[in-house]
Image (cartoon, rainbow, N blue to C red; front, side, top):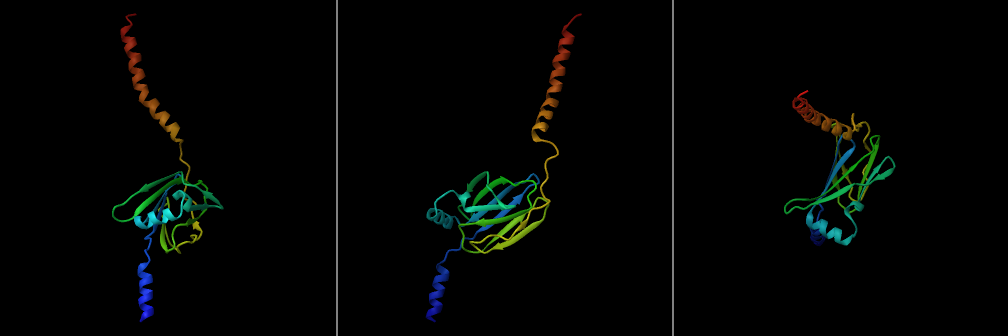
Length: 174
């Protein structure tokens, strides 16, 4: 009986992180990774382990680390707080291994591939994911966005230029 009381106290005294990780990929190789945790737990954990949040996660792609380009903290009064990481994968990326170094409890990792496939894996707390397939989902854009923007600007300027040209023709009495 005493063992049950002691174990019950130990188990109930441990705050679970309630960690959830979702990574969404787009066709152009960009990604958004939402790392959600209980806000009180996250605050205490970050105070005990100094450094930026981005240093606590690893995107290991084809044998090298891909760093997020930005990190945004989205607080929550109710529910889970989110650290949103954004970045880009190489268009020829084949594999991903994921690591989140703040947690100790198992948590779900959900991958939404650009081709619509869904991968869900339970990560064993302070552990690496298995090797996840990224192949075949990324495509280079057909046209460079700068070229598209320049073409649209030119198309919008053509009527204005024609209008000024015809005004000059009408004003010349020759």
